[in-house]
Amino acid sequence: MRNRKARGYDDVLGDVLKLLGEGGLKILTKLINTIYEIGEWPKDFTEVTMIALKKNTQATKCCDQRTINLMANTAKIIAKILRRIERKIEAVLGEDQFGFRRKKGTRDAIGMQRKISERTLDIDAELCVCFIDWQKAFDRVNWTKLMQILKRTGIDWRD
Image (cartoon, rainbow, N blue to C red; front, side, top):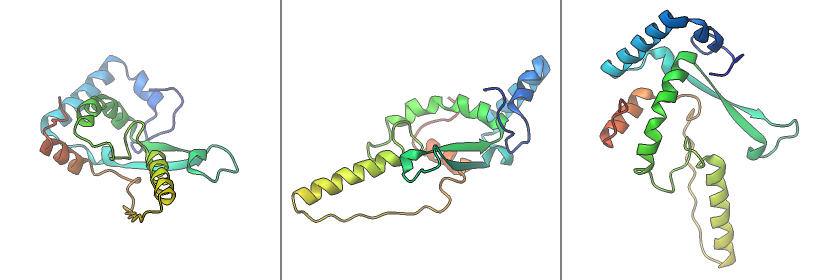
């Protein structure tokens, strides 16, 4: 964890977690092992808020903004451990699956849609586009549902 980061939902500074010493490390290890054994996330760990920040004051395009995630700092530690799943799930997801993936963000999807639209106009063909607005998709993740989906696809999040 980087130094001098904001408090998360758990109201714990990352700097404090670093100062816990051997006893704190044992407590965090026990917490992580308990989550692993029962397969359920604490409610505080499932709260995530994503905020878009302008890179400059005149930002008008998506590429002029970046996002930050506000979540419990203790959950961030576990999330780093879970990133191992990315390598396994990439083989299951199609090339047209965007969002919450490295090098497959919303901007990439918009760019691809723009190219498809331009090519369709070039050959004077018809194009139908459907946009789905998943309300609060970026505000929170249903971790229980995510774990169920991973299990259904044959990926044990505890591996």
